[in-house]
Length: 235
Figure 1: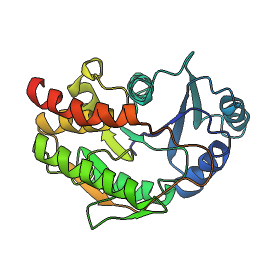
Figure 2 (figure 1 turned 135 degrees about the horizontal axis):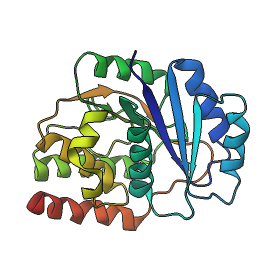
Figure 3 (figure 1 turned 90 degrees about the horizontal axis):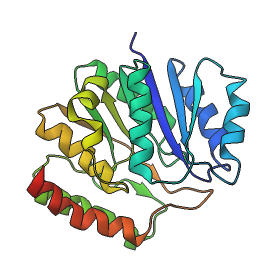
């Protein structure tokens, strides 16, 4: 049986973290979870520590001293996963925008021989619920832009619901990943693609968070827009 880890990066997700952990374990009995928390002042890590008493062998916490961005949080989580010999490593948000019931389906895709599986909002149309129309159009246009600039055959390159086989992370070199915001998601997929790994887009329905605040801001958006050109030229 494959050793599977779900990495959830958090900053001020006290309203969601307990529920998402319980729901993941309800849907997928054979996975472990690593919460990578950037010392959330709202007590997110305290709630995780309480749940570790309930799931002592399956739930883990990596507490970082300060908030350094999404990319560095995932890189630290990936390194932890490789050190602990997980064979499949997933990224997932804490806010229920990614449905835990999709995890087992995505695990099966990796088991069927693919190196990377992407939970895709845009593989079969636009499957996003409760976002303002302006944000949907911006996200969809950004996906087309990335696809054109990079040549990647991926409809949702900014997706944050992704599963990697461990050999992908070892090959691409985690210390070579430069972006810190949501452009990190593009760079990871691009590095996997140019190294010849097989990718599969699994269609999902993305739901806007009901609790807590989004971490998206204009700085992250511009990093993605201009960073893609730099990445295409120099990677």
